[in-house]
Structure formats: structure tokens, C-alpha cells
Image (cartoon, rainbow, N blue to C red):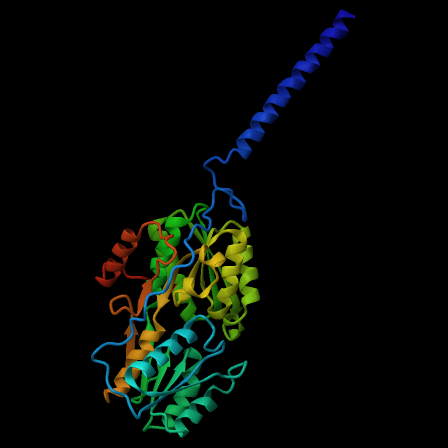
Length: 375
């Protein structure tokens, strides 16, 4: 009888000891220690949406007292897929066109292509036939059609955004996208708490790879331990990746769920889906081209960490100014950090250390940092 009672007591003691160990293990796993969780939605060890909504945009900085008088001159512009309401590079180009109309008095007309962009060349020819002295194609997809049209209209001036057409009557408006992407990469690296950030490219082209390369380099500069997860919506040749918000949201949600707490997109109109995913996951997003903080609702504004400003509006405006002032010339014009064609935004107040970012910016301008253009 005594031996059986002793055995029962020993079993009870072992059971109590096991419960204590289980309780300690549970406490360690639930206590929110210093290790990042790596998971999406709700983790306390990831960067979350803390931005200030409702800020107002500053007045346009386009134009000055030395702008030429363009009265009587006509400027036509053809958008790429996505149109003027893509909240990206098309919209930025349109803003430059409208500012030129207001400040210089030029007559303007903007045309949108069909869904697959197959009528780009027809629209360029339409504007040239209608007497528009400067005709602008927005995007690298205009390389072939504009090359053909410019040769047939030697007395008309042309411009192309994001590509280079070598002709005396074509101005090629290009940008150092990698420089601005480097800065927002540094901004992402300052904020990430999971040491995982994401990059969503619309279409896997050489141009979008410049964004990726700069972003990766900027992240590595500030946080060498952070990794960049890269996703493209469509392969080169399938340009639907620039206008597929649903796909952008799905891909971004997957990155957030996998542990990324900041995502930078270079996906045109598909970026709207990235912002929706950020708000749903309570994670951060970085816009592109325009200051996209001012293009989303307040719930999404809280999640906007920054935007890489690619001032297509500046490139278009300055090119129109050359034409309006009878100073048009063909050739390559590069817009970068040094001439304010590239920059970054701080709307929402979530950039952790702006002084560090401005120091990196100056080092790029001074040539002390050379940003790569290939991943």
C-alpha cells in the first residue's frame, strides 16, 4: 500500500514538472522577444503603418519667369497603356503637358492608345498630320513607332520618354531611375524590422531592372543583413503587368505574408494593388514616379513610407519649353538627382532618418557613390 502511494506521488511530481516546463516554453514563444516573426499581418516585430494621413500637396514647382511664350504653337502627346489616370508615369507626363499649356500658352492635345497599344504609330501620325509641331510618345514602347514616324516627318519635332531614338528631330527624355531607387532602398532598410523587404516590378524589362538594381544597392548600404525579395508581374513583352491592380495586390500580399514589411513597386497602374495589400496587412509601401501618398485614400496614406520621384513632368515640361522657345534640339537629355529630375518623398512623416538619406543623395550627386543599373 505504501509502495503504491509512493509511485502515485512520483507520477504527480513528474506531471507537475512537465506542466511548468510547458508553461515556460509557451511564455518564451508568446512574449514578443527580439527575434522577428517573419510572418504577415499582426506581428509586433514588423514595420507597421504609422503615417500621418491628410497632408496636402505643395503647389507645382513647374515653370518660372523665364518660360518662353508658346502662343500659336501646338504640342501633342500620346500616352502608353494605362492612360493619363494611371497614377504613374503617364499621369506625370500629362501634368507636365498641362503646366506647359498654362504657363507657356501652347495648344495641347493628348491621345490614349487602344488596350494593347497597337495603334501607337497611328496616333503619332495623326498628331503630326494635324500640324502639331512637337509630338511626344510616353514610354519605351514608342521606340519603333516613333522611329518610323520621325523619319517620315523631318520638319516635325518629336520626343520620347524612357528610350533613345537617334534622329536629329527627336529628343530622348531619359532618367537615372537607379539613383532614386537607391534612396528609397535606403529608406526601406531604415524601417524594416523583419530584415526582409520586397520589390514588385510590373514587367521584367531592362528599364525596370534599373529600379530593382538601385533599390537593392540602397538596402544593402544601410542594412547589409536585409534581403530583397523580387517579383515581376509579367515577363518582358507582356506589358499588361503595368495595368493589373488585382495581380499587383495578390503578389504584394504574398510578399507580406512571407515576411516582407516594406515593398517598393515599379509597376505603373498595378501599384494601386500593392497599396491595397499594404493597408490590409498593416505593412509599408513605397510608390514610384509621382508622390503616390497624394493619390491614395487615408487608410493607405498611413502605409506610404515614401515614393521614388521620377519627374516625367519635368522632362516633358522642359522639352516643351525648348520647342516653345525655338531652341529644340535632338539628342539625349538625362534627368537625375543633380537637376531635380529624380528625388524622393517624405509625405506622411515615416522616413526614419532623412539626414542620412540626404547625405547619400549628395554623395551620389558628387560622384562618391556610383549606383548600379543592373541587378
